[in-house]
Image (cartoon, rainbow, N blue to C red; front, side, top):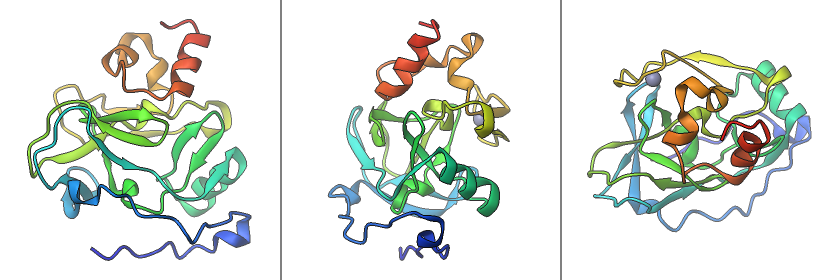
Amino acid sequence: MNIAPYTLNLNSIGVEVNKDIAHSPVLSLYYVHKAGCTHGTGLFAARNIYKNEEIIKVIGPVVGEQVADILYSSYGIDVLIQVGTKKWILPSNETRFINHSCEPNLGFKAAGMFVTMCDIKKGEELTWDYSMCEINGSDYNWTIDCLCKTKSCRGKISNLDIFKKDLRLAQKYKGYLPRFVLKEISRRGLI
Ligand SMILES: [Zn+2]
């Protein structure tokens, strides 16, 4: 599938785009398809995939909190993936098509590196839980309705769900959360 580049002029808002970005060597693991579970386009397994296989790494310009906020509030760009405390990547590869699910099959091996949390059959949609690495509060709060329709659907998902004790998400995704999220969870005394 031909992926259209962002039409937004990133340079005008101070974001430097690396034009030499290398493509992921594991592209054959998945394909992009229009009939995703929640938001149209999604990523699907191109073959049977085993638990703990590396799927794709988010690549694209790195932005700080201020630019992330502008991209979201002024341009409606909601595909940023957090990779560190106050550090996001604006995905320029297929990671921006991965839909959210409250029963996801992808987690993180490291910040921005997606890995399978279970065996996945060819043709299944690849999903992750958007709350897995969105941990900044205050000015950058968001809540969205979830349409995943899975048994454990939370109805609404937010950037701070991972810290809610009653949801036990940190436990559910044990071993698949990036280090900066674990550090923040432990700093808050939740595990
Ligand atoms: Zn849901």
